[in-house]
Image (tube, rainbow, N blue to C red; front, side):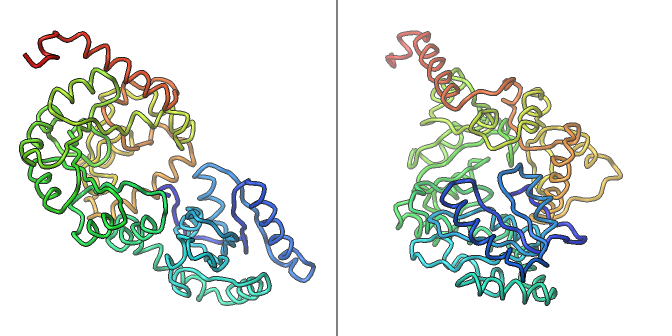
Length: 398
């Protein structure tokens, strides 16, 4: 939900209804909408939102004062969090299923308002439309202090993880996870890993109790250091003293590269950028085309996205921050909040010349949309061919 921004300005829509197109959900949601469309409530300005790209969500949510979320599920509806980020008051059906992961996730009256039945929901809508100051107060904390890049935000995401029945792996980045978090996750039979950019980081992660580390070289996309994968992987393996497995990350999109990682002593590889160009990726076609047209040298390290060094697509926006007269970077997470709002506008305007999203150097090998299945097949095929092409004496360890 990084695309969702909170914009100031008028909100002409009183109530919005959000949901997916699954038939059962759609029928239930229609009943709720119809209840609000009774003659005595025709004064409401109502919007019914369905599938749309992220920038469209941002536009629609920023026009709305209240978002009604009706549904009981064993999954977290991210639309709820996006609505909060956009400055909407979310009035949601009170969770009744004890296995519902959203139960207890938000504080009633401070971050969200629950309704027990349709008449109760109507009363809440009437109240908060008549008391705009209360509506804005409830959502304020979500906007300014509960983002995923804050300690409180990270803890809240972990709350979701712990309630979700299918989560089997959590990987930490930008620092070693707190010991109590590692213990809690392991107690739930959830494997814990961590990314590192220096050997000393790997030691801290090992000592924190993680079960494997990912040695991420500078070729990688997103937050990354300045040590190449070729140099870093053996250093990290030595640093953890073979006590935990080490995966290699940064520059992996082909089988030949995986073979090189295995030769360095890694147990496997960790890939990121290569998946962004697949059909299964949630990126819009506009965003994918930005990756397909990029060259390897277009993946540059800049601080403008979060305040820390991020390898990202070079654009007019990223380079403007490099000019001598550019403002200083804000400390994390403030720089990220600032940059995400700019990014939302860029995506909405479809300005590829301003598009600066995280990307590793393998972006230069991505030229057209493919599938996860095809990527995996091509990797495995080339890996086998590469290994078979090596000297038999090397393969036999002689």
